[in-house]
Image (cartoon, rainbow, N blue to C red; front, side, top):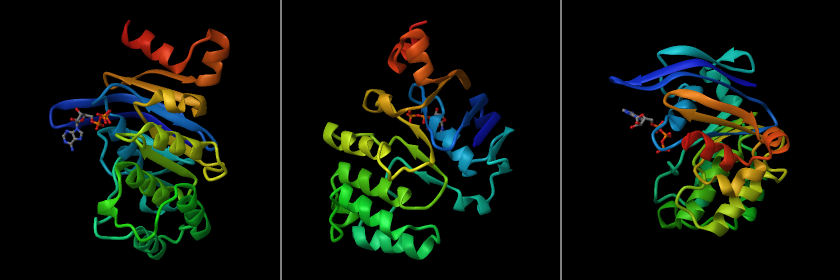
Length: 229
Ligand SMILES: Nc1ncnc2c1ncn2[C@@H]1O[C@H](COP(=O)(O)OP(=O)(O)OP(=O)(O)O)[C@@H](O)[C@H]1O
């Protein structure tokens, strides 16, 4: 389980996170939502130890974040970080050489699933294919937790659907996923839990199925309720 306990974060004088607490379980998809600039990416980076927090603690399976935990967790940023002249195959080879947790079989399966051509260069990929490769490079690692920042940003509906279908496939397995997205409609049916951020705080944390059954509300309904007061 990932436990975020009362984290606070300032950039200069800007207080982005005041006191953010939530948990994300293994085997579940937890979605961080909130308007632009609320601090969703900052939370993911804090979990990875990529940005220091001013207060609070973060535990991954009961342990504080350290480089040893990188065999347990991976972060898929909102755009691909591989050099533009590298081919898809070279990116996969690089990951294989660099990470002991690289799973060659799953990588090949994902490349087939996304219909990526190994000879294409990163810089020449369409936005959708670059997003798919980015996802592949993270999901092919044998880790327990995957953090994804806006995997659907700027891509067409069919690519979004294809990416969303990965979430219900065996390729995700029993991993814990934390995702940030503005495209709730695409993945509403896949999300187990929602953490709604507002003004540096968690405004609501809920299980989607529970809210659906008990209150008859969708995630969008809850979001409208919160943002429209
Ligand atoms: N390195 C930085 N230096 C200064 N301010 C930053 C830095 N990174 C983020 N911020 C600010 O912190 C706030 C939260 O940013 P963050 O990217 O976490 O939000 P977000 O919810 O992920 O936004 P979006 O939905 O637009 O992706 C924003 O106001 C942003 O301008």
